[in-house]
Image (cartoon, rainbow, N blue to C red; front, side, top):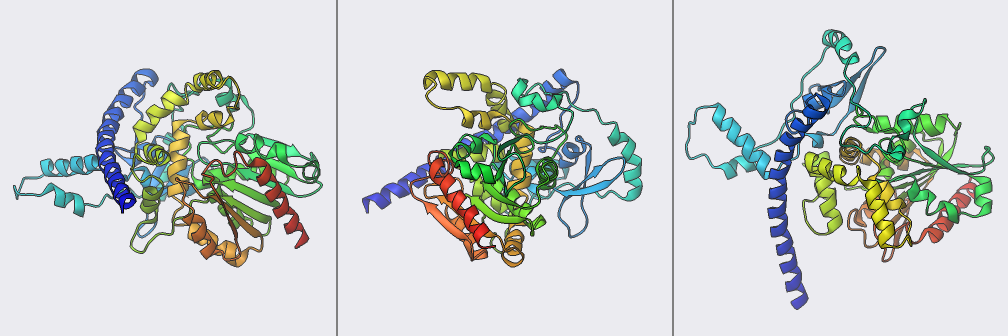
Length: 474
């Protein structure tokens, strides 16, 4: 009884602190919004649109126009000289309900019209209000008229003032080919199978190359070609400022940089966290090429009836709670466009300082690859990838899983840490329900990171066994 009471008190304290802190953050994000507009204008001589005011302005500023059609999902249209290309974006980019935003919207509406009822209850307005995105329809004539204007859009400097300017973060800007950074290991020639490793959110290829790659046996490295990529916008890969980092853009870059560049015809996929979504999308696109799927901590939250998938996913991965800390960090990254930009400014732009301090404090006893992966990105890439991949694909994952179950014959293996506080174990259980043939392993006393880091040798053996059994079952 005492333990139960303490738990209830703990939850109550967490709820109160969360309400207070996130209400303050709501106000702070609004203040930072105007602050960054002024700073951007002073330094870059251009106003930087954001999603606080209008999704139309923010998307159009990157050379794209927001469009919508009756009954369809919100999409962006990318105009080039040769093609008109539609890509879906997540409504969570510009629809993140909060107390401050709802009160301000209600206030503006009241100021714009004569007050007919002085007893309007703001609380009732908050409960009944629904946030709708601002969209406009573009027909072929308007598209043709705007092609010249968009084609001459002014590009931002590389790097921007708030991004890191070190050689590691910007090595891609000096490259002639616009491809992802790919760290390869194993046999140089195509003698056996290929394996594609996809990291998670705000990480890099080092998540694999510093852990499991050194622990593969000589036999494995003489049989397989191993490809660990830095996703678009992360690590040493390109970080274009005009990209919206949609799932199509991520998949196109993987195809171009790995599948086409290295002539990969059939392959195994190993993916962690956010990378699991890209892995599923890739498997659905290449059903006859994927030989096995290994998913680690996949973010799959089945959407209840009546809920909007994108908004439900955002609330699950970023619950606006101060505890656990990993959920607090996810909430900062997902709910606050300008607070998260400030964090990137402090951490990512100064990542060399943080790496030096880590080495100094630990006396160089631990490797800093996790810190490098955490810091080596831009706010633009992290913000759009988080919303357009994790939240934006929430309504698609169920279809991906149905296709994997019904149309693919590859083996599916899922690993999850027992103490994962960001993506709970239930996500893997839900995935098992959709794909009954999947093998699910819950690793005791491991979390979202230590499911790989710290048990890399054991995980390397598990992967080798998966690939070996796949070949035997052909």
